[in-house]
Image (cartoon, rainbow, N blue to C red; front, side, top):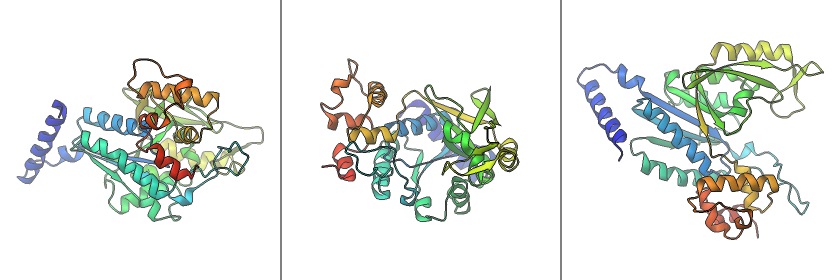
Length: 330
């Protein structure tokens, strides 16, 4: 156990004892953090685990004593068509693997983090899966976690981490106010990632290691702005500003930023297993493997499929055979 982990372990014991004998409890309470990470995790990748590790390390260095990491995968009912069109022209693959399989791989991945951080709590929450389809947006999920005491009763203790692309879309979600009512937001940035999309531009400025943001909405030629899914659904720019922009402006807190140099998507992993990578996909995946795999020489396109069973472990806790069986690939 490293020095900082030993120090935090004994500091936690000291504060708990101090509380029992009548000392101040505020110090301990102010040093707790609930890290909420929603997503599909189809499947969980080592890039996901890298982020969780980085988030824990981020708050340990800030002196937080009680840290809980809560992974919240979406249910099967969230299933949507994949953009991965099979090479043989057959119908699109399902974009999400089964709940049972995804949860199994998440638990498998969390095992290594539990060994590394013995004093940190890692939880796989099935709250969204168990309440399908009643919880239809992230705000409702966070509210449900609050009412069931899965997260802290104190908003500032809770941080909901979203990728930059999703942070940009927060004002367009079903009820963004619920997220700001029960938690603050954190940002997961990816190497080389843009902070704008077709809907809104995030205008950031730095305060220390955090980011304060406001939203500027783009006016398209029709005077409307597309919101979330389906893309055909539209809302007037004025209504979007009045209903969503005010909520964001009034509630957006200083957001911690955790930047990842190693990043690849679950969809890229799925395409690799199905051997459906195009040239751009191949370059991205090779770049990820070269950063994740301890090798003496760079990984090349020629290496990619020579020993896929061996290389999969550098990308995900799932084995190649498990993925093949789940995809029903012959």
